[in-house]
Image (cartoon, rainbow, N blue to C red; front, side, top):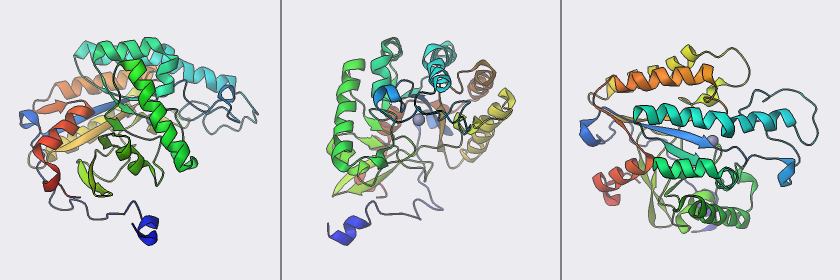
Length: 310
Ligand SMILES: [Zn+2]
């Protein structure tokens, strides 16, 4: 690449599939594919105990509060711990009782600190889309640091789960180097994109990489910062997205990403809305509730790279 090409990489694409998205031919002639991403971050967030200047408060009840705390914020630490101690197990139970799969968006460090959760993921045969070695901001890392963190994450997940991740999704967003580093690390798809409702291929230094876009909209991150949040609100957020796509899916099936965090949706008054949504989904036919790895495999088989829009 020339310097100016390098400066513009990754390229932007305002067009995508546009008016004529491909029919994804989901298995079972499904009108919609749904992937639940359970974000497992607790224990990998920024913390003075891990050398960071302050405690992360993202997606906790303390987010945005002007506490003036310097150093450890013990309340926020505790709110994170709720996620791994209580919330994860409630979410797991909702899915397992209904026989529905989900994908673990797992930070490697979080699973190092919660071996019981790692064991549960192995038992559940959940697939893993790596969410970083830590729950960290990749755009703050140098290219070398980022490369090392990606390698550490893959090794750590292999240790925790017996297999490395096929996919990757950064906290919030990638750096300009992330996609290239993931291809070099052998990660076969990434979800560092919010720009579509179907997977697509991109060219990375002459190699095709599969992109499975993610979303922060049908996502429990919408339930913060503070304010009254009811199970009905959460149910409506999810079910309206489902109903719209289900209707469109008669002719143009798409994919619905649902993002969940144990320290958010794992609280009972929110989990109730998720439970109602899972039952809403189950009351419809022609719905493919699937793992992210299943979507990747389906897309590779159905739209081999040369046919994909790059
Ligand atoms: Zn996340």
